[in-house]
Image 1 (tube, rainbow over the protein chains, first blue to last red):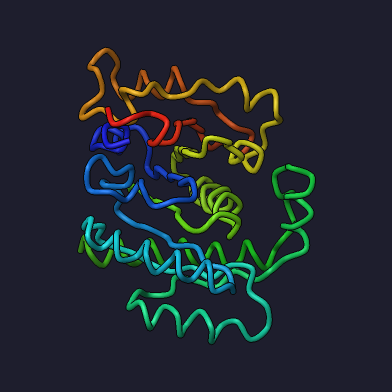
Image 2: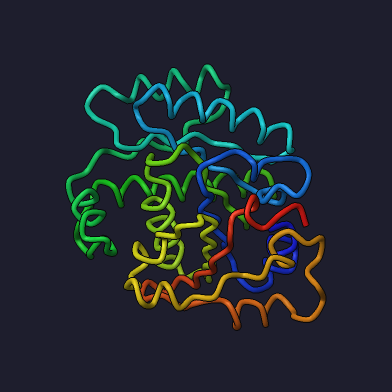
Length: 143
Length: 104
């Protein structure tokens, strides 16, 4: 996706968001899909396997030269904040947010549908904070 | 601004991608979402049904792995041709995975 994600796409969209397949090949140096990403959000859940994947991803992203790489905790239960904070400290990436586990999200997934308005409010609130975090990071660099 | 969402399978990439995309729409921005999964599900989280999702054409390989596209279409034409406007006002593109697209 080098060409799709080249400079021209910024004229067509204010935000281009790429939901990457699982796997790390999109971060390879030759034709890596995310070579032009301005920001990478590495999503984790409270599981060792997802943390190990995140660690490998962060190393590759930094080698690729992606300028802003942030961790995001997802499906967080009580007490998981410390877990995600420790992981991000270990990997030396800022933690952009911690999204709580949410029954509405699970139910929307089960239906295979859009999360309805009013559903998953705690999740939406945290997503708002994550977007604020990304925006502030971009302003900081640009300014 | 180009934002990549990555992580192990099952961590919630697609759900968060959809919610982040919708948050940018709510802020009045034009948002393009690209699903690179060979079994794309982002369409559902943006409000399309299965039939509508299946109707979205795959981006051609030359665009996905080429060094600058094949020059036959501008980026705007590509988005018009391959993009689907979803109920959440996010324009969605489907791209196949790199491993299936070959080395280019």
